[in-house]
Image (cartoon, rainbow, N blue to C red; front, side):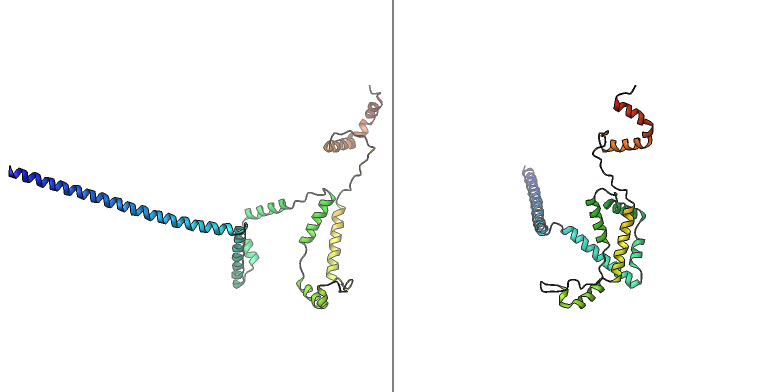
Length: 240
């Protein structure tokens, strides 16, 4: 009986030790999980704070900052490429054209035509505006002439109310030739336009819209001599 009671007490002690070991392992696992969650919470808080600071910086920047930044980066890259080509003794424009594919060149050409299409004469205001754009795009500043004229005029280069320089400017021969050439081009281009048809208030209205009026004019031009008698009979009311 004594041996049986001793064995049962040993089993009970072993079971208690196993239970305590299991409980301590569970507690350690929970503490480890808690530490991991605490670390993740701190990491998320830090990332959120960084994101808030970055968002605040972005909101304080100008609205077109991204475009300006991309433009500045492109200009820096272009400047570096030009410098490298100059060091190698190569023509930058030629090297740049060699990098352009046929598809890109065709797309740029289509975009250029779409941006400023030549629709012909639509009105005097539109024609004047297009001519103004064309003339301003042709302007190339002559810095040498600018500096020379600045030295000649001195303080009167920037006139005030007391300056007396009106009528003293003499255009250069190159400037006169350039103006004459441009005027001749305008005359040549203007000669290719068809003259503006005057509107006749007394003419018969036999159309319902502008497109129908053009069609009737074409029909009259080709078949008018064959249908003149029929038309007159219809107008007199004597048609059979």
